Image (tube, rainbow, N blue to C red):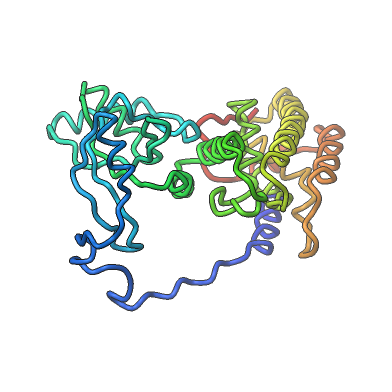
Length: 332
């Protein structure tokens, strides 16, 4: 019942995005001849840098959608590395990819790269890069983009298609730290498209502190209490970290309740979701001003600490359902 009420409350607060209108056929971008044209001013400094770095420029063309210059280059593989803020590598995926590439005896999908201090960062192609290294490759073909900022934009796209909440959140917090480390100016709101939703920042900081943190139980209400702020990233990062610490404090209290339920013979992979749903008073919230993060955490923490375990029946937990748990999550 609690889960059903929570889903209804979430549905009421979800704003539907307007449906994208279908563009007229062949109404945007460049023609084939324009893509291949050398009429545009190409990034000469980048071309010279590639050659100085031991690479070779294979071609230069204009992107067919936005007319931006793209350099197709062969790069020394030891000079290519992932951005420091993207998702963790999946070793099984690397091995499967290497096996497929070896069987085909071809590398047909160039990585995307940007030049950074004489090195080449790839925000899209880390698994292909490592599969090539595993096979002993000397060089790798890349679509080299002149603008370093594009790496963040591409990572944002990767975040949308990441496999699970943990990967999305960790990638976002690493991007956040990368931007802070680079001294990027401007309020947090300016970077909202890169981060997708503010909850990923806080949850990512929590995952950094506790890798097996089961954020799926908390994500629904964190989405409601978090928002992008009109303050610089460097000022907001300590706040996000403090909020992550508060989430983990709540998690400790919830785990204590879960353990008490287990001692009473309650067994379910959704025990934590059940407890969080019980203490989540926001499920009864009507539309209005966004709830305050700290006030919400204070109230939920108090509810968790005075949770009446003996009032829970097995039938209550039996009615609790949900999707699959995150790979690193369990019921505790």
